[in-house]
Image: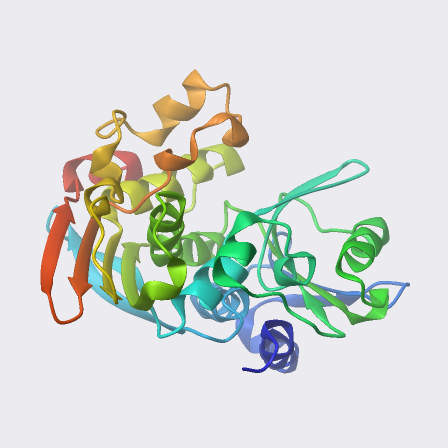
Length: 310
């Protein structure tokens, strides 16, 4: 299969070509790196969020928008589907790079992680990317500068002029869309952490509501996690059975039923202080090919309605 980063660069080129239509802004830094503002100072939007999700998954997913209901109220939902879950969701989309360079802080996702390949997922999947390009999507309240790009280039082993950084704020339409597109990734990651071989994941289709844009990144972080933990739905086709499928959905944790604003406040809004099992979709259907189907978990529309201010 072609390099994840090379496939992502093709989508980045598309974003650059249609920047005006996507309501994003493109900035070439003095050192040649390219920052794409998907929703920090730029407006962004639904189409920007959909394309960003494709970029984050290295071009190995289909992403589309749809309508569903929360407590009888029509609401925008994002649906993602992939036939390459291990690569698209774990080796690319997972937000696994805690980015810190000088005063800049951000959370990195996307295929540039596969050039470093230090996270456990890469050993489990048996994948490491090789590319002259690096594409890292950054979730941050500010746009990265030259020092950030140089840090990423050094870690990835590529020229700084080959670094592309799509960046978005959590509190943006783009951010709400891209984060809703992570329901499948959370299910795949949780399953991998429980000891299931991610290579046995055959297909993943997922849906989650797009959270209303909040007044701050902190509140947006709470709302977007509520959207996944209480509204995220995932269907997985897998090759082998497992006795811990019931631990994948968010209903398996003690905190189920509490809005994330309360959970984050208990942890002084330190995202990294929360146990990884906190982050999971609400409902998971597991289709073990040739054996049977398990339906696990449940959504909580009343909690979503409260979180979203409906």
